[in-house]
Image (tube, rainbow, N blue to C red; front, side, top):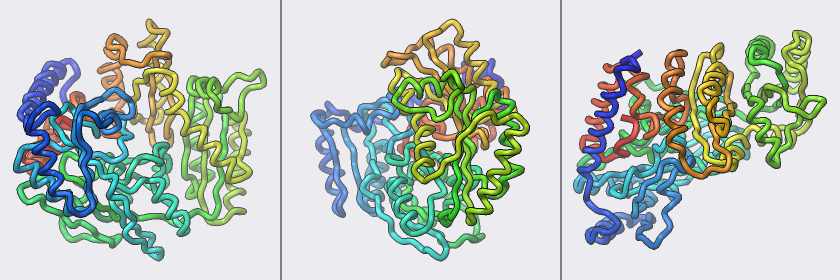
Length: 504
């Protein structure tokens, strides 16, 4: 790994101070500055193709300034909403010339503060007006769309055209394709279809330079080996290198056969064995393998959500698994599914379960899993962590954090995740609280990140680095790697006006 934890904290503090110093250079305007109206007028003049601007102290811009966790808040008084790539280019060229920092924003469903302003000096560029589906090739299964398209809208379109999205997320009703690409989203079917790196064929990206250069990387061929595959620079870059305006995505055919089940296990060892059995018996049709632990099941039970399978005494099992298969032949797939279930029961790793008998029951099972985030959010202030771990150590971090927080009985540790790809959603909630507890946070960070790295995991499985994990990136990546990332940032964003203070 990179530098050791013990030697890293002081340099990280210096890095933080340097970032603050860089951000202090951006003082073009503030909400109280007389030049603010002049800036609004200048930006408005550039939005002549259907774009719009929202501004002013009397306008509620909270949703643009606050991320999903409510932990990261800015105070930008200007939100531009371009309608075309040309408008994006004009705005970035103007902002480059005038040293105005820009925060690109999609659905703002991130958890690390990567899509909101750090202060009041930045303008927010919301992509919500660039939300069109431009074309669809049903023979090749390739969709071309604008970056502000809401994921659920794309899913509905593809469903109507006998295809499906390779990406599915709990935030699908709000998140947008550009944000999904900028954070390299994986989601629930990552094992089957991969992340955005695996499914993006082409991009259109606007750079923050003197020309507002538009990069046409809109390849629509599944094979293209003509030089550097530059689109991958912008996938997972969190809007720090350029602003994605259009995308070409590969979309699989809609499955003709689908099976979904909720299964109970008594231990995480049984979860691991059941995963092994699923891979062996289900093979190519295995699409999702999700886990929810007892604490999150208890929280769901206390809400309006009904957990379908419980013990005879009404208590929740230690673990519930949600497993889905997708294939083309119902009889063949069901036979494989039944063989898998029978084997797991015979081996004693599956102690209870229910198989969906209709499309509605399948949706209900997924709705239970997707309710984990909002239910915990409604209980109190939640510290959310999205990490990746080797599957053998996947649940060890939960026990480690429970022990770490044993002096804080008010802190409830819950977990769920895409266990098949090692992605764990670890949540720590203080019931009834609405604000951050600095003493509790100091117990969690950087301890949690250090432990994940010791276990050969990743401090960010999804959602990216943003503000939350920026100071810990040198713990995860070696200096040479971080230096190269910084070099790319300087080359593509020479004035550091794109999402400053994020990622690097």
